[in-house]
Image 1 (cartoon, rainbow, N blue to C red):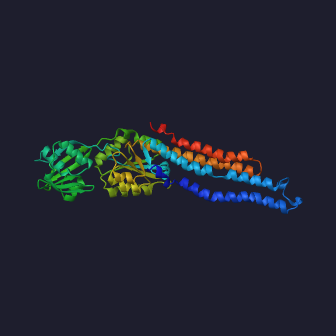
Image 2: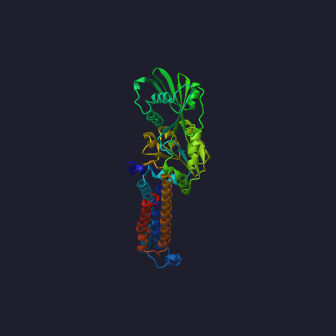
Image 3: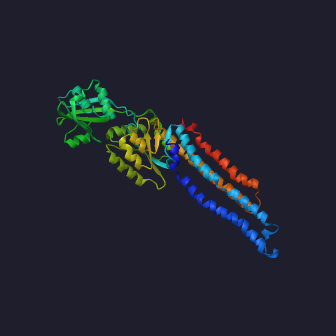
Length: 422
């Protein structure tokens, strides 16, 4: 349904051709009328001795024939058919690769993308967290630390919460947990067996005025407090997606000059992933509003004609996806809000397909430009020949139907995307 309705969001090239045809058509009709009337009037009113040389040996039927040839040649169907068809071919070709583009304007914007900004969790990483270390405070056992965190997080659907419950591995009695509150970008607070328990990041600890202990190991840190006392922290790791390994090289080959990662995770975990994948710039420990602010700053620094793409999957990424020049969401594991807000959706969550989408968009734009210049060039040349009586109706038919047919065949090349599936 989205592909079928993508025509409502036209690219700048399509809008140009629509505006061009609006003025072009009446102009050529007026020119064809003038091509018939002016010589005919001159032949009728001027004596033979006063007539220009180009009127010698002609009559009004010859000029009518020239005007009709001129009118046939000037028909803009090659432009108004082939250009939208090229974009629809590009959208269809991208969908064959599992890339849903919601409009031809977004396909055109992808071709101008020079900066790509990524969320980390679920976008570059698998989004499947695993508890890799338990560091309880003095006087607290590992089981007590993990159980407190698992119970506090038992009502949350966040991937970190799921990993804590999975690591605990035992049945959790939800009746033991009351007064649950999820604090966006911080963590969870709850009462477990009547005791106040907090589980979250360092910002939550600072908010509650609790002195927390740092961890040198890379990964996501969940700090836990019980009755306002620090109980320790849990290290959770999220491995990069295998496809993300070749992502940066593919983007550079597609013309991207700058890659940036924005995440709410710890700086150590973010830098470890960025170093592994070759991403140039990292900003960690960000709230959703901070991500929008960072993207605003990157938009202000980009080149005038360049575009910025943001890639994310979570509900917290929806504002940034909307603010970027083109938002790209993960379709399989991504939240409904992110998919709705995005302009491009990767249906199988493979981030390497971002480079494929950009190569498809650049190929589509090349074909669009080829069709525009080919149609205008042939029509311009044959129009001049027709005005001087050199071109016959056969040349006129070729300049109209023949050029349109060739342009449509060229536009169909946009559907050939086998090279981008690799």
